[in-house]
Image 1 (cartoon, rainbow, N blue to C red):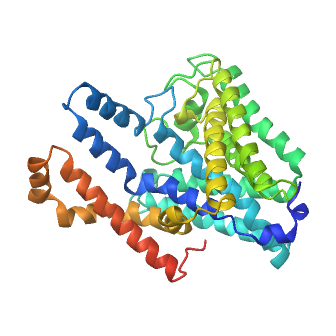
Image 2: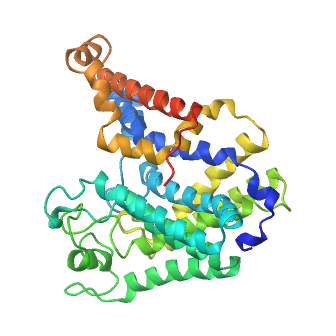
Image 3: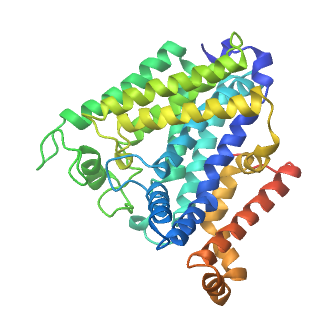
Amino acid sequence: MRYVEVPLDLQARRVASIDALRGFNFIWILGGEGLVLALAEMCRDKGAALGSVGTLLQTQIAHAPWEGFTFYDFVFPLFIFITGVAITLSLPRLVEREGRAAAHVRIVRRALVLYGLGLIYYGGIGEHWSDVRYVGVLQRIAVCYLAASFLFLNLNWRGLAVALMALLGGYWGLMTFVPVPGVGVGSFASGANLADWVDAHYLPGRLLDKTRDPEGLLSTLPAIGTCLIGVFAGLLLKDGRLTPAQKSLALIAAGLVMLAAGYLWSLQFPIIKALWTSSFVLVAGGYSAILLGIFYQVVDAWDYKAWAVPFTWIGANAILLYFLNGIVGFEPIARRFVGGDIGLWFDAIVTPGTGRLVSHLLGLFFVLALAGYLYRRKIFLRV
């Protein structure tokens, strides 16, 4: 199914669950992470049961050391997946309104703006060129959006499927069979694999991990695959032949299949977020599809929207809130009100970690207050 084959009446309908899921996704970046870590600290030394809960929370809200998959590993690929879904909802309307050529120009412009915001987010060019971080979260989103949008506008669903298999299979082939100088073939160890070698030798500027970058050059290829999985999910949501319940079940079923395939593939090609391995793409895509299926069923099919209003506020301006949080920080602002001796007082009267919990709760309140204000005023960042 190409974009022109999506019925116009379906193109016009807004899928409320997408904004809600995007908001759920970003709330972990905007303060949810610190909130959970504060809870983990509060559970420390409180007995075996609470201690185990605290350990679990602390483990799941941090990235896996190398191989493995935690909840926090899921946050970034979920947003790239949602970006793919949104492509199928927004680009057909743009083409109908402005034409194909204008749509391609708009895609390039949006990608460049996102990339530029990413450069500013990581420090801009305030120092030397060698200190600029040319890759990062927003930069990867920009590249994935650009590539997936072009593919969506110019290929049918079969072509998109071939592109997805080529990206995941090609990356696996490169990482498995291309020898790394001084290491050999088939190594996926940190600092001793093809993606890290490419970053160390060909990625200019500042690398996040000194000699490698988790958003590096080669690993961006399978990240585009994550976005394409979102495109397929979006096409499924726009399929007028299916009932809402059938769409939800199809998403959940597809997610389970991807999970099985990803964990099976991981026996040879390990699940490593820092390398964005093909098995990681399938596992993250599987969980993303399942979560989208659940959100779609509850929010759109059953029309239970009230509980998701805060998520919808955040999801409608996710990039703006993310950028502001990186530049200014909502929790640092909150600490101006409940930090220092006030935070220590909370720790003293309740338990260590309470002060941190309160500051993150207040930070999230600021996020919701701003997001709600912007939403009610219909102020949205358009890039």
